[in-house]
Image (cartoon, rainbow, N blue to C red; front, side, top):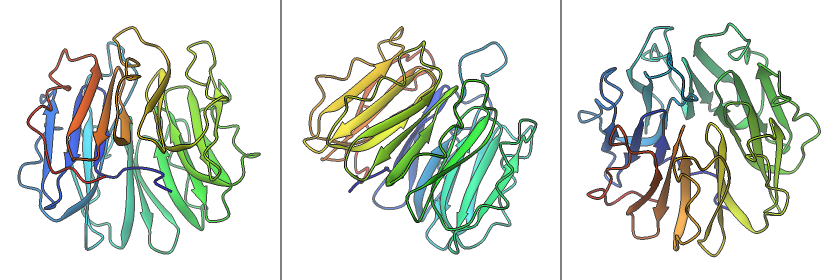
Length: 282
């Protein structure tokens, strides 16, 4: 089962893609150098810091995992979220607002950045397989399919202790979604936006949580979306042959089987200008 693509990432105001050859492309907001990825090589996974739209949330960062287990980062570093140069033996990365998580080969988790809400309190986590960062909370899937969460829980977005048989998990602003091994989706957190309305989803192979919306891919390559659609970020029902998705603050990316990328939603900063992208592996 394809649980998550490490080749595509959507942030607050930018988008990132990893090519087959290990190089990285990025478009969108550049004021904080979050798109300064041209020199990167030998990258096997990318992550983009995302945060809900607000007056104080314009800056972001980008993280890249290299094949040797080292980590690259560029962009806003106000809380040390890009201080990953010393990391080794990393197998996966996740980026949130003002922080970065790294999954070690032995199942432990590294964290740098803002911890005011306890979102970096992952030192005790063990046997982890999947990580995700929301705005103020962090979630993960353990090898037994159970979930862990730390950080802000004011809307119940960390109430994942009862989840079982998970293959993937994704954290948004005030909600968390999980993908079960049987292709069903679960959700917890703020329901007013509709981003948690995934109970009817079936045969899902990948999903991602944006700030106020959730996107999923079915085994047939069709795309599902629920939640806020004020920028058209949920207008993905006509997409076909998609193998992975990435949800940003107000835009959505979809990776097709031919390595091209589809977009929907807010393009105010050029974050949807991916027409020239190709060779992105699913």
